[in-house]
Length: 243
Image (cartoon, rainbow, N blue to C red):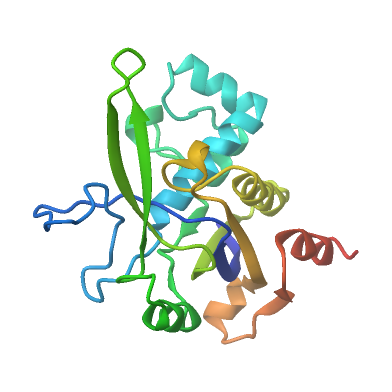
């Protein structure tokens, strides 16, 4: 039975350029053959919730031994051990486990902040919210160059994010701590593509964590603010632990 929701809000700041791939059925002359994903209405780049959630899950599966053992047992597919951290936070579909295990974690799509939209509009180096990163591969035998460009959201861009963690009465109380640990793992890894070549370093900033009990929804009670406007993820964790 439902007990409460934890709502984590804040900003994702691009420490380096960020590339989360999209598709372009018609590539303009001089355009990039490796474009970023864009919102269909505004045309602005955004961070899909599925990309962030997938990264949180995959890193947690490497971090937690029980989750990793389940991935190995499943020949590389997602962990399906109901007692491992990955399943407790991100759930399992019936096709994965034979029995549906609902997710506790909802990750919303993240859209650019007003400050970022202004930055994109006033910079001569940024076109429609992106920059071009030029790369070159060399054939080891013929020495022939193969130049290419990758479209990236530029360093300094920020996106509003929201993650909701649902807690049920029989849940482990450490789920929130484990989710925040997974977010720290993303900060020390990368989001999107080309991470080993410099792209995708991000940081979670201006973090707010609120707890909404059942009465918040049934009796119009106020939410409980646990963390208010922490500049970094580590600072938010320290405040949550009373430090």
